[in-house]
Length: 283
Ligand SMILES: [Zn+2]
Ligand SMILES: [Zn+2]
Picture 1: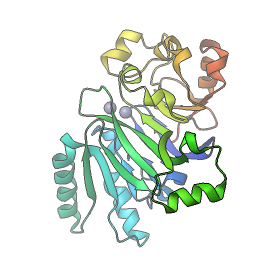
Picture 2: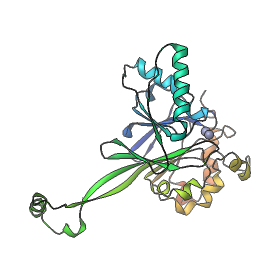
Picture 3: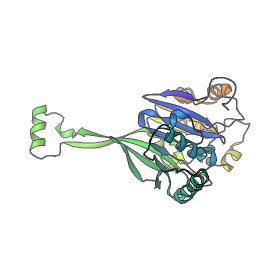
């Protein structure tokens, strides 16, 4: 039932069908993006990043929390989401907890575009603006790397150590965008948040692929059409682009062919369609 792809050093494991359900784990980073499906193997992750409150992205959160409890995890997961929906999501979970007479605890964290929180080690999560009819966010995961200050590069190890002992700050910090996630948005999110285009791995929706859905209709629903990816083909600096949230009007086994026919080769080589093997979507 789950799809797994490798994008550089990262594994993306989960399920995604536009409007039906989307939930993707990246185990190397310890994060789950969205909670539209409750696969058992994704329930133990301690940080859940919710893009928005549509049910195909949050509908299975109570089930994931229940499975997590069954797995013996007692600490509530951190659930990151647009700040505007913290009250409503918490109230919804409380209602279900009352219904089942069993708690469904989370540590809710509301974010606005530009906000950052620590993830683990040298990794941080930053929220970026996306454009959908409801409050929504994309996320980038950045790694802060400290490097020797360039003017000290010619010094030997012991010389640098001596300067450090003398109290000099010998390092400078730089950030690398490891992975980004943007779904359920107008394509203009890619223009407003260039971090998305610079991430080593970009996970991005492309709900509609060809004339079976017009560009105007895709925009009316605040979703990305492949026309808009092709239009920006030269601007993606990503090593890998995991494309997902495809509409079920396309069969999973025809998507790679549509991409081959429509996307310039230099970009197509980097696109990994997140689809199951075979002719039908799971479920
Ligand atoms: Zn969706
Ligand atoms: Zn949506």
